[in-house]
Length: 404
Image (cartoon, rainbow, N blue to C red; front, side, top):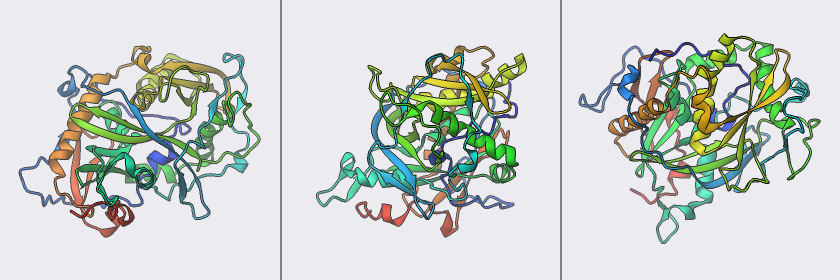
């Protein structure tokens, strides 16, 4: 297979705020990478050739919902974590999905936008863990002993790793090993920071369109009516917490959920719905780019948490959605022009997680390793971060564990 081309993803196809705002620090740029862990450890993990990972789909346990929580904003810019589903919206489809008229620009001047410079890292997920410590191993005094999982992260982190063999995007993941669990927290790369901060006014507005689309199709009450007059608030979110395993790796991760089909006979996550927008196709090249660059991300994102369908609003350049389309998660790989392979993607992820375990061996909440994939790079490199600001597991969390 070919190497991936540059992804020209539209700004409104944003990652969730909870999942992308996962670090408060930037990676340090050094001319030399000194690995102090010993020369026996590999310094790079290969992305290519893709044939290296061309094998049967690895064992992946059906995602099981382990819990949920809700988020909203505070005056300081931090977010409140509620141990409930108060922010879960109900999917409210229009009568005729082939004929709609959603203006995604409406209300942009009232947008309550989360400050992207404030990075949540893993904090919201860690707060949920402490609120639900009875789900994990504790001693008689209520001190936590273990999460009984190998990796803890946001769903968005896994999505980026899974898509790596087919997408040229850069990413950086900080990893700390603590009490038997590898904690993974995304760091905003310099490349992505420049892109975010260099957005012009139209690109900023297009980031709003995805949120507004969700408002047109959701309601607070079951069988309610969407209210598009209220300001859109990107601080609000409903998150599912999922347990799964990839081969020998036990996984615990969380991701935002857009809405639920209240009348579905299925239980979560089988009745959750993902909402997306995309520019209407006007030629074969646009259709091909959609399948190659957007669909793989939609598939990985939904497949990881067991969401069965993605509802897409096809818009024009003025932000007007004229029709809706439905994509079945388990059939996305059969769409025209798809040139990615789910087995290769998941095999890459499985072996990369094994590589992380091989490198990160010191059980120390203050020790942080950074794994980096540069734009279009053929490998992932790693190094040890040595600044106090690099530490991402807070003391209010680690102090709740039995001393080692």
